[in-house]
Image (cartoon, rainbow, N blue to C red; front, top):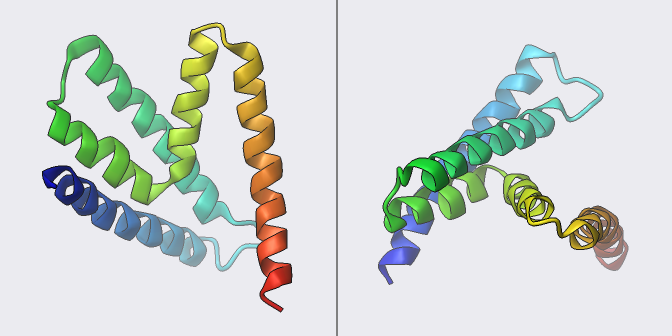
Length: 123
């Protein structure tokens, strides 16, 4: 049960961070035509999960409860794209190229198709 506490706590702050950065980008760029806020969250989240996963892997920097808070909660609330990126890189590092390509292709294509289907069903 304590895992859910750590995940929830991280998710709370991650979601606030995502909203804050997206809003800031929108104001800073005067409501741009492109979703720069989401792009910024995705790129920053990917950088952070890569850096922190490296710290955890190479330096054993985080105890298990902090890993749950940071990786699942905070970064999961900030952007699940970072998890997608890390999992794909792990596949590539393990020379699992076909699963990596499938993960990229299916995640993007099926994700977009699911949005389209969801929008269509909501009418």
